[in-house]
Figure 1 (tube, rainbow, N blue to C red):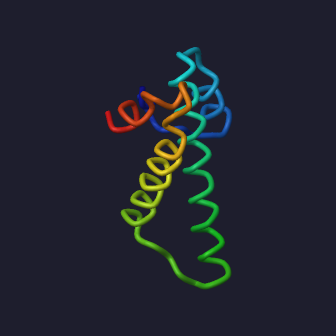
Figure 2 (tube, one colour):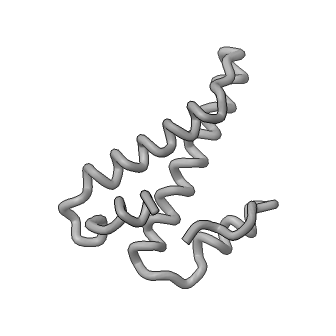
Figure 3 (cartoon, helix red, strand yellow):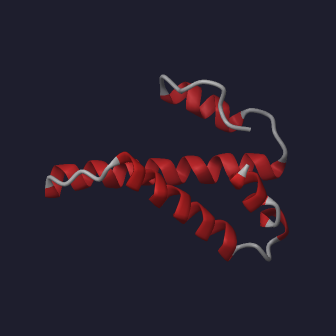
Length: 89
């Protein structure tokens, strides 16, 4: 389930990640958070070191593509079987 509001700090994000949920939903939350943080960090470093900023839509596409790839590459693992459908909802 997507968050109902935006996060104003790390505590809220961590609370959302740790909120009671099925194992699959909990895993999807953790994967999505990890992917978002990685891509935001990458964007930050790109700005600092190369003075290049990607449009938000490009960052979102990269996040979506990476998460789909992570789920697809592990689809034979039982817990990953339904994650793609959950991600695409």
